[in-house]
Length: 494
Image (cartoon, rainbow, N blue to C red):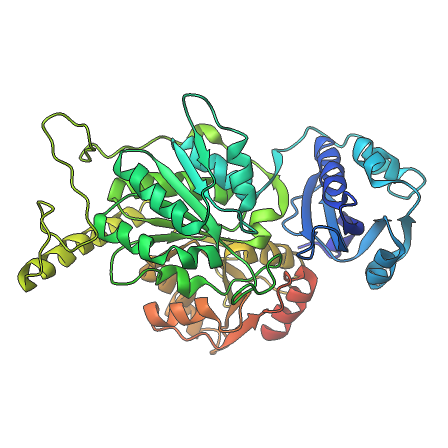
């Protein structure tokens, strides 16, 4: 832990109205710093407007690993005076405000913003570039590609839209095809037909769009069709604050669809995990013939960070037991009705019970598979008497906040939400009972989430019996600030 981590981290802000080129300028500045060898994190904040409003890009960079952006600005670049007033409280002493250089010029030559500042030395090469600057949506899409994606179908809905845009740009004559149907219901129903025909398919939407897909999603469970669904959360319910983030749909994802049927829900926390989740989701869907949800959110989907993605690590895993229409001498049936082993519809009680048990027999195989997967990750001090538990994009501010902790803390990231690895989670949260007892009952478990209800904490209680009373919850649609988060955690573990 650094005595003053902030001294190693510098932040540039770019503000203006929608249409001024704020996002492009932010990406170009970040890419420039990345090319010089720095670790970079870029966040984007914007209203649901095509023109006007206030858009802001925040670029934090360091010579060392950086997990999240920081609020205090060393340079502020603006295309209008209103942006200065909005961010005046975030300015460091001696900050340079640049208002006389057009954003398009900065996009062409990001180096100009460092001229005449105390950060001029940072415009020179620090070392070899480390990894690449990438957002969670792009990384996820590349994971799907690595696992043999044939078709991607989606109707645009923030913050999932960039998956559609990226994959559309990667279409090939003989390979990947991308389709934008008229709505989300059409997208998933078309996808089911493609899966039935033997194609590896994914669909994507924001949570509101996924809500429209529920009847067809249940069809995947009944027909045992391998489908990947990307669900990116935004502040809700209803239209909510569509360009802002939330972690309020954990329960919706794990209980989605009507009726009971097995599914897998994976929730990555950074672009590297998003890539892996895309590839794993496709392979798991086909291995077990179940739907797999990858639960993202606006922060993970759209923010960018320096990441090392190994595309060579992915294999395309097939299910040799599956057959498809056109297979010689085979009849391939699919139905939304309850059916027996031969695909014949039935309403007999004994057949229905046997069919439900047949589908749920997969769950035991999936649980066995979990033993070979990273269902959770551990950071910080694994021997600490205090634990912080979190999921999804909250990983970034928690790991950045760890630089400011007053004492060592164990950090537990949950990656698999369904099935839930109760045995491992219980082991990581409780630790060695004798060890915990030696601290005189001072051990604390703190859950950090971007929702009001503490949905992960309630899921942990349901699955393990562990009640987490210490929670840090944020439900104003804004990301956690790592320094503020560190202060709250430090108070709880004094």
